[in-house]
Amino acid sequence: MAPNSNKYLRNDTGLAYLFNSPLIIITLIFVFIPVVGTLVTGFYRDVTFMPNKFLGLANYERLFEDIHFWQSIQFTVLFVTVSVMFELFFGMIFALILNETFPGRGILMIAILIPWAIPNAISARIWELIYNFEYGIFNFLVIHSGLSAAPVNWLGSPISAFFSIVISDVWKTTPFVTVILLAGLSTIPKQLYEQAMIDGTNILQRFSKITLPLLKPVIVVALLFRTIDAVRIFDLIYVLTGGGPGGSTTSISLYAFKYYLNGDFGYGSAISVIVFLVASGLAILYLKVGKFTEMIK
Amino acid sequence: MSEKKLKKLLIYSGAFFMFFFCITPFVWMIIVSLSEHPDFLSSNVKFIFTLNNFVQVLTSRSVHLLAYLKNSIVISSVTAIITTFLAGLSAYAITRLKFPGKIIIPMALLGFSMFPQISIVGYLFKLLTMFGWINTYPALIFPYITLGLPLALWIMLSHFSQISTDFDNAALVDGATRFQILLKVIFPIALPGAFSTFILVFIYSFNEFLFALMFTIDYHARTIPVGIALFEGLHGQIPWGYIMAAAVVATLPVIILIALFQRFIIKGITEGSIKG
Image 1 (cartoon, helix red, strand yellow):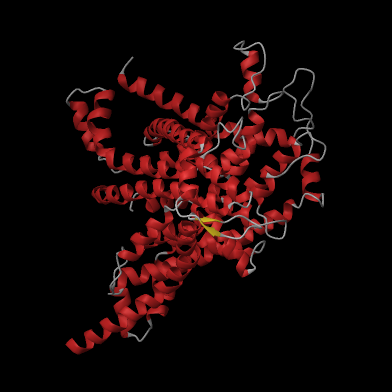
Image 2 (spheres, rainbow over the protein chains, first blue to last red; image 1 turned 90 degrees about the horizontal axis):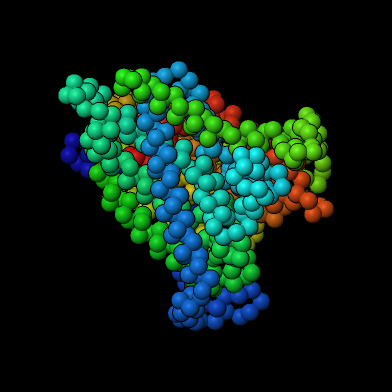
């Protein structure tokens, strides 16, 4: 049997690569080459209708002194921090509720997927209408509850525009966090809670002593997933504010996109490389953390 | 109040909040789409029911809504089918065959999935221009396959690894090839997983925006999220009634999917993220 199994082993390798080849080829052409291409383009002056010219690190030096670039970094960091925080908070509450059995839970499970499933660009348009100055729901509520005498231009000032974007994003992505946390919650044995109840603990003690520690790996995964995703936010902002007012809500992806749109691929690429580096750092962190999620399987 | 009653109260009030939190914008979209005037919240305008917004966006030639919808459905379906099949091929090799690279391939793919789209969109645009693919279906299908593959591979892996290799060995003895075994034995057993994969990749492709914005020019390939995002009025005023009617048409396919296949979707999301 020994020579035979050797032969199978050799066949296996060839066959395995054959089976993996379409996936590898597509990834090489449509992800790997563009990534390398972006890295290289970042060292060039690459503007439509102008001859390309090698610049070395000049694009990156320009980045360093570009106020608008720093402004977009600042916005992105603030946005990621605030929105991911709210998403985890609401996601946790929603997951705790859905982990219980009660009538109507099935409908709730469908309702929670609605924000997740609606395309970002479309939900951005719905929110645009909700924030509408003349006849949006927000201004209707604000005026009729007496909070403000005059309508608020929600998307018109940097701070309210920032929170408008956060609210829309929290609405859209809390369901994803909920689903992941719920899966983690369902793996915690019910007996642990029963035993703790016999020992006379209250609801908050059980949450902090049993739920939180056991859920930690799943929380970290949800946190990293959302962070990686939020860092590259584009479509919601593109549709809702277009980066305004005065560039105050321009995310780093949107900033790079604006240069691509103007045909400045060199500078746009340099900005993209920064997004890419930040996301890679987070991705490596995720791959490391991901390992200890084996425990909960 | 006993703790049990308090808990019940908390759950119900939380559930109500959650329900309205999730559906209010969605319901608002439907209400405005059925209203003759989008500004009926103003004190001097009344809500008047009408289907005119739908009639307009579905029949007006210049809007191209149905063309966008068709593009979206075709592109997303083709992407989802190819991605599920390729992920299955790869997952079969990884779970059943001995070869160097067993671990590197899924890990590298997961790493690739973390690349922000913005870091490839510029060069990809040049590449697709070189291929002459701009404003065609393949310009979106191939990049979408790469977006869906990592998730698809993780879901398929977690399903295939639970299927005993006894099935393979029995079929090998009967003289079946590995490819036949994958198609006729393993895929049918892992059908729920394949289905989760298909639906998730479909929804992700249906929702994608940046690539669709960059790589399409008009209704020949433009997808519905881009179509609706770029929908502007002809006379300065934004036609909210039309936009919301178009949004209802665009969200209908995904809403039907989640109403029918909620379980598969939730299973897919968890398998695609936590098991990584």
